[in-house]
Amino acid sequence: MLQHLCDSGSSSIVRRPYSVSANPPKPPKGKLSNSPGVILLGLLGIGGIAFLSFTQVVGRRQGQSVVPDAEKKPYRQAQTAFSPEEVTVIFVLGGPGAGKGTQCAKLVDKYNFVHLSAGDLLRAEQDREGSEYGQMIKDYIKEGNIVPMEVTIKLLENAMKESIKKDEKQESRFLIDGFPRKMDQAVKFDDSVVPAKKVLFLTCPESTLLERLLERGKTSGRADDNEESIKKRFKTFIDTSMPVVDEYRKQGKVIEVESVGKIDDIFEKICAGLDPVIS
Ligand code: UDP
Ligand code: MG
Image (cartoon, rainbow, N blue to C red; front, side, top):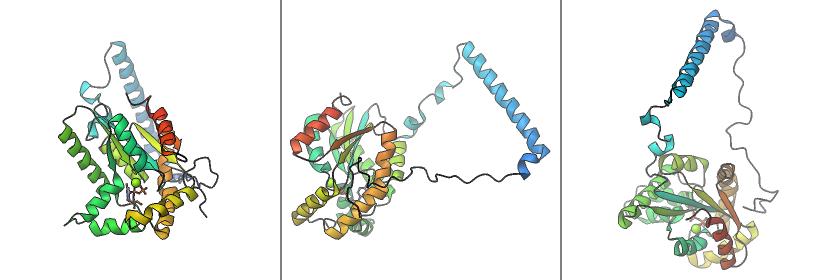
């Protein structure tokens, strides 16, 4: 079955295409393209494009920008809850048991990050008296499934706002651990909260992860630290979360570190990757 969870060099990882369909359906042939009306529309279209290009060139020659000042802001910045100039977000990803929480605690000490664990926020919401999502979160976590993104993103956004309000800092740094685990979450967060600056990805063979989680399960009290739930979490990680890592890799945002060995040695490797991007 699944031999390695997040060792990116492993051939056992099933790489699924990020795009919805590798072979998009072909548009219907015939009919439309033969009609005289369509030919006329086509000619008008070409004329329009030529006119627009001409006005752009003229505009630039006269030293004017074709984009009005009000529209110059990057699209995302106008839409997000926080500005990437003021708020730095680093996502920390890796299979269950990869050591995200352990390394985040050390990073907080060194770089003055605020650490937010999506799993911890969900568990807190699950236990909050009167929460309308409590039972739903419980069921998703037990099954190793991903809680609908609206809930998790809202919890993260609220926690970020709360932290910024409390510290009254101009600039804030967040380590967001265990999120995003699904492509929809990644897109929504980057577009509506703030685009992540980097993604720290911790890799580890599945056998080591299983060992660590079973050990942790003896004392963690977590409903998902048992063999049955762990297996489901591994599968969710490979099927649903690895495409997120792959997408960020394409964007050149991933800092990948093998999280096997001594905690301090792993931390040193992480710092070597983060130092150049954290001033
Ligand atoms: N979870 C989720 N969405 C997230 C993060 C976590 O639904 O964005 C759920 C999911 O069921 C996951 C569980 O919370 O298996 C535990 O996550 P956590 O990060 O605490 O586990 P870890 O990987 O650290 O063992
Ligand atoms: Mg964790």
